[in-house]
Length: 207
Image 1 (cartoon, rainbow, N blue to C red):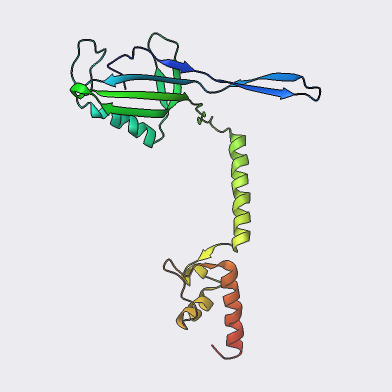
Image 2: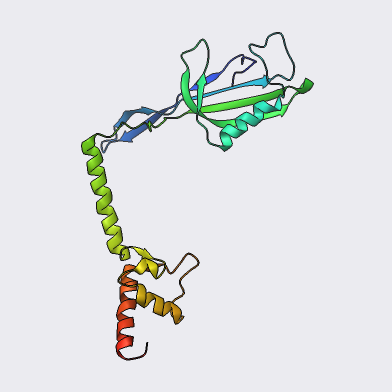
């Protein structure tokens, strides 16, 4: 967003931490710490009409300026702040934004920014060796998950074929297992236990 009205001045702050320690002898020691993040602020107005001193075309609806900045804040957008004629070109966030309706329909506002550090999320392409290593780790993790959960999920008698389908179908027909809305949701260990019970009950003539 380009500002149609150039602020008459802006303020830059770059606070420096000042830590002082006292030794056992009473001597004071000062340490040079890393500076805090830079801050920039100014006050100006958004024009509601075409003044001769505007540096660019203004938005037709003056309230759109406030709406856009409010959306930046709400959606936590990082902003690239560039001030022409200065070396200022940095990523910032809005830390304060106040505005009021002025005389003639203009919007008076004050705004403050704080420097932010953008994390580089771009990643290089994997080499064949890196891909194979990653694939092996995924397979290892999948095996651990299967071991922890008892293997595959069985949602129907057909899913249990060829080892567990007969036992699962018999228990379903008898109303002993119903499952959930998405299916029986049985682990392989559960299906194995149902099969053992089914065989024992058949041997006793119960099923």
